[in-house]
Length: 180
Image (cartoon, rainbow, N blue to C red; front, side, top):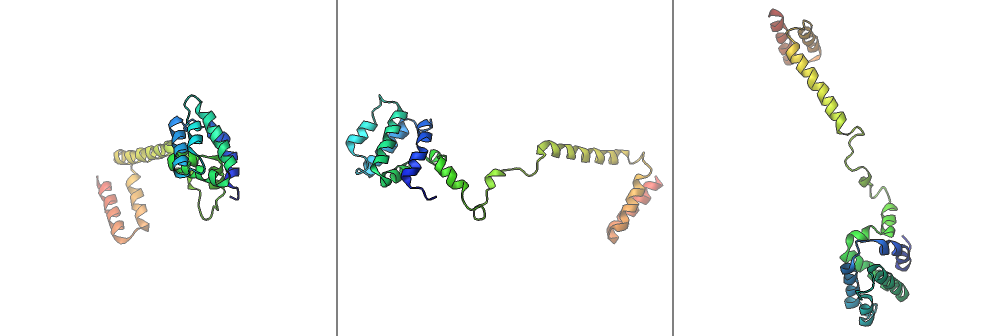
């Protein structure tokens, strides 16, 4: 990818501020994660400033991201780690993560997500139509055999390319229907 976490955070910032999945509770979890595990990144005083509930969540998140960018590369990396830990679906939908996923080598990682369950382009109506035609022909053959004179002869002709046992059965069936 080549970008530093600082650059990635600058690119992901508008998306993070606009994403409604990051509610007050999740932003507080991120702040507490950074404060408790990495107090050098986010001190108690700074954490309490970013946790004020009278300030809208998007504003608090924007200030937090600005603060982390000012702290440097390690702070940005730890923010991404906390985001991945607490809000995985947001983490994987970030523009930088989507770009990374799309830029992977297609030979090593085939892109099956584009062709989910498409076996053909005809959808289920094509299958139902073909099945209906086959069923109709089978019913026509079954019920209309007595009325059609050439139906049993066609079975006798079809027996020419089959093995000896199958050929005998089809020829016997043909002879029996002709006697009726």
